[in-house]
Length: 358
Image (cartoon, rainbow, N blue to C red; front, top):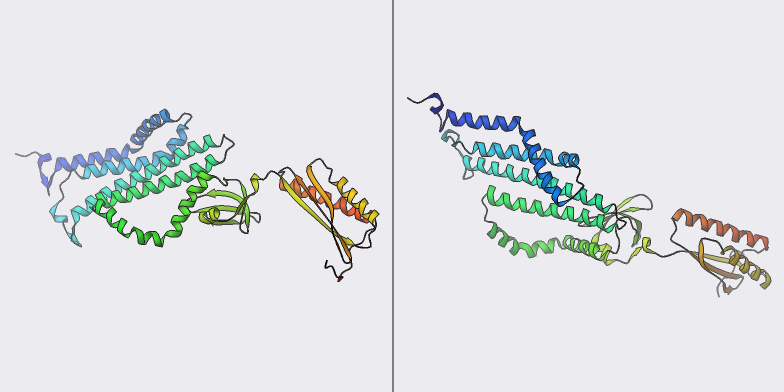
C-alpha cells in the first residue's frame, strides 16, 4: 500500500509537492539571511582586490538585487523539479505552455542576475570615484563615469543575447551573422551616433578638456559637467544646461579657457583731435602708471591712429588666470582710473556725427 506521501496528484507525488513548497517557503523566509551571507562572501572577495571598501555601502547597493536573484533562482530550480501537468498544457502560436513557463523562468534568472551585475558595476565605480577624487587630475573621474556607462551597455547587450539564446531558443551564431549582414544599413542609419561614440573615445584619450574645465565651442561657453558616450553636458554662464554632441566637440574649434596662461583685457579710447601732443603724452604716461598694478604682469600702451577729428589710443594688459570676479573688479578699477586722467587733463570726446574715416 502506498503511503500518503506517495500518492499522485496529477503527475507528481504529494512528497514532491511538499518538498517544493518547503523549499520555496524556506527560501522566502530566509532570503535576507542567505543574501547577507552571499553578500559578505562577495565583499571578502572584492576586499582582496580593493582596500578601504565600505561594508555598509556595499550591502546597501548589493543586498536587494542579490536577494531577488537568489529568490528567483531557488524558486525556479524548485519548480523545475515538478512534472508539468497535462491538464495545463495548451499551445499559443505553436509554443507549448510548458516551454513558455520554462522560458519565463530563464528570463527571470537572466534579468535578476543582470540587475545584480549592474549594481556591482555601480559600486565599483563609486569606489574608484572616491579614489580619483583624492588626486588633482580630473581626467580620472570622467574616465570612471565613461567606462561605467560603457560596461553597463555591454552587460545589457550580453544579457539580451543570453535571453534570445536560452529563453527563446534563437541561434546566436546565425543571429550575429544576420546582424552583421544588416549591420551596414544600421551603421548608415546610426552614423551620427557611431561618430559621437568614436568622438567620446577621442576625448577621453586625447583629453582636450576634462570635467570641470571652462570651454568655448562655437557660440557656447560654460563649464563641462559630464562627458557621456554620445554627448557632453555644459553648464553655461547663463546657468543653462546645454548638450553638445561629442563629434561637434572634436571637430569644432574648441577653446579651453581653463588652460590659458593669462587673462587679457583691451582698452580703446577715441578722443577729440583738439587734444594737444602734451596732453596726449601726459595721458599715455598716466595710463602706463595705472597699468603698473600688482595683478598686471604685462601691458602696452600706444597712440595707435589719427583720424579726421579724432585720435585713437589702444592699450592691453595681461594678468595671471585669476577668477573672473577678481578680473572684472580689476578691469573696473583700471577703467575708472583712466577716466579720471581723461577728465583731469580736460580732454574731450570726438564730436558725434563727425567724419572718422582715415
